[in-house]
Image (cartoon, rainbow over all chains, first blue to last red; front, top):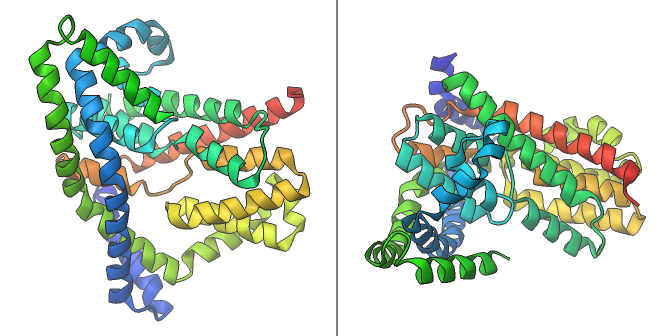
Length: 173
Length: 187
């Protein structure tokens, strides 16, 4: 199982190459064009992160996130969520880049293979920028009353954070 | 919204710096943070670009389209009113198929087409369900965070996959359950 997971990236690339070969896709051209699109994504993320990283670094230097984590720790403890991830939880529904910045900070500080690092990665990998996405869809559809969509979506987010913390503790705790 | 959060963070931390972490640390943090943002992007750019290339292969090989078609029966049950219209069903299956593979650039336009169609149809409940599905991540391969883990020296960047799948499945179920419950009590 673990050997299979180690080989995830090359195996997935093999599958994609085989699918493309069967359909007679220009393999090299597609890979290069895709990488070019990825570069454009990075060009979109970079300015956002330049705006967000300094604010998060300032916040970290103030020690407020730790204070906030302590304040919320009874509630987080009851849910089984590590208080270190407080900032990530609060940013996740609002800003995708903000959450990425918070998660990468946790991953680099605690280590990619630490429990906190893994929990942060699973949390961000199994959730979305809820408030941004719902605002986008309702605005595009021209519907003003979003009714129960946002509460239900936030329920899903809470379930995601709780289950991420639980499964990571189970697998690597 | 994030702008207001940034304003709050800067005001609070700057004014309270002398009593909190210290003025020197606060001053250094801001400039270092900006540099850190650029080096972070450079560290993950390789992984993100490689993955984007692999997704392009899958897209061109028609895997996204086939995934969407395979999901049609399920979508018919989740969106009974919209599924009656061919153009809505195909937008929905394109949206969900692209979301599963993590193709944000393809998922959003298709999702918006579906949302607009539902609004015209007056299927408000189904529009809300679509939003819940799109705000709960169903991405099978979380490639960006895998790139971040690889850049931070993870022994095996993708070994979080099973955990991500369990957590995604549970959160989607929770979202749909909350939707089923709330649509009955909401005015």
